[in-house]
Amino acid sequence: MHLVMDTPASAGRGRPGGLAARLAAKMLRALGDPPVRLLLWNGASVAGSSAPPLLTLRIADRSTLWRLMVDPDMQFGEAFTDGRIECVEGDLVRGLEATFRSAASHAGGGAAGDWLGRHRARLGTLLRANTLRGSRRNIHAHYDLGNDFYRLWLDPTLSYTCAYFADEAMTLHEAQVAKMDHVCRKLRLRPGDQVIEAGCGWGGLALHMAARYGARVRAFNISAEQIEYARAGARRSGLAGQVEFVHDDYRNISGSADAFASVGMLEHVGVGNYERLGRIIRRCLRPGGRALVHSIGRDSPAPLNRWMERYIFPGACPPSLAQMSAVFEPTGLSVLDVENLRLHYARTAGCWLAAFEAARDAVARQFDARFVRMWRMYLAGTQAAFLSGDLQLFQVLVAPARSNEVPLTRADLYRAAPAQ
Image (cartoon, rainbow, N blue to C red; front, side, top):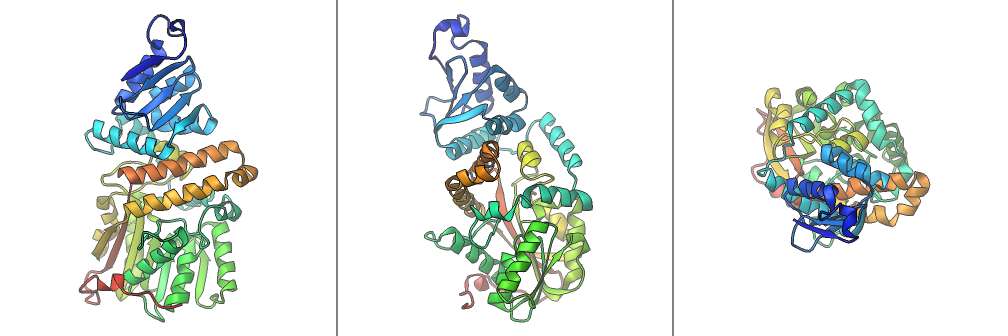
């Protein structure tokens, strides 16, 4: 730990950096001494490691430092959003990744936070519970910010889930299309198959299933903005007779299907609703059917960062594989395949962040500078979390337990996609 005075010693009351610097040093030590440097309002410079810092942050005042000491999970994001913490040198993503890694190692490799942090996280989950009404409120807070906003930095399909970089040279758009093909191959879609999709976003996957694989799709979503966009897309592409976009909650899904897909929805369901979702999947699947659940996850159970849960994804919780099993084990569904696409999501988030930064002036005109800082922190933190292994991305393929219409090998996953 290194304390350096960049102003006269009187600013530190006769000690190197004074009480503020010692508190900052203690905070960095609690994070495992990451290669991060803090510049304090009194001129003190505090480095967490003797290695060259990957990131230098300026802390505006004593109040901000105290808040960070008391509640870092919430206050770091709030202070960054308010401009009370600024990145003055280095790479925000690399600095956050290094901090996540050092903090996990210092805590013994676990993702679990302290007892008070867990208690606060549980309180937030209760306040933003995923009831029928609560889910609509939570989804509206994030996904109904406006299609014009998301068009600024997502790919042309408006895919807002992990892409699949089957080739290192792929653009984000190519990788999002490759992800759709990867899902469709896992589901072994054939012309005429009936598909139910839970949580369809702006409709890209449902339209892809219909246009490229000849499937008939009923796709459910509770975001009004996304559903209207998806319906317009179906009309433009001449697929309105093949794809039905239903503005309703997954809990109201009915009917039967050859395939069931849920891509990027499980994080918003709530662990207590997993078995219910599994029973819906099982009820909908025909005897030879198959289902795929794609979700951000963790290696062990832990709540989402509290700042992220409050300001970005209300009510969200990335599950561990053990938690995901509550979707399948009680409901007569057998797991056929599990794939972890963590590094694909790190690269996806990096593409989003770069596009967001390129569009930040337009974003500021739609919202304001504070919103830009908040979303910069969200996207940078997301990329860092996947790079550090704090977050995972699971794709789980399942089928009815007694079905023998399952692949003997994984060869189907890598066959060529149908020609468009």
